[in-house]
Length: 122
Image (cartoon, rainbow, N blue to C red; front, side):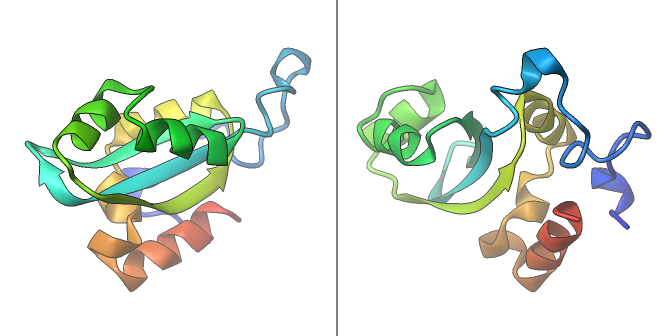
């Protein structure tokens, strides 16, 4: 079971909910979590969604795409992609609203994050 702060909505797990016909093309997207090795102001993580994760991470490395990733690149802060989930925009938005990135990051939360990630993927 999920800790209360990151429990899935009552309608069921967002990871296992069947996709509607108009959402099938986004159902194969990847939600990813990036950990900054040094905080940029208040930010230590970036949570995003990509259809092609490698291409999206390359765009982040070059400073394109999300504004936060652009300023992190300009500041010379290194980062790493530490967690991925198969999901859609609903999952991405849900995780962002919960502000659960620090609890799901294995760098910040250690083994506890790995257990949460396993629970999340069930």
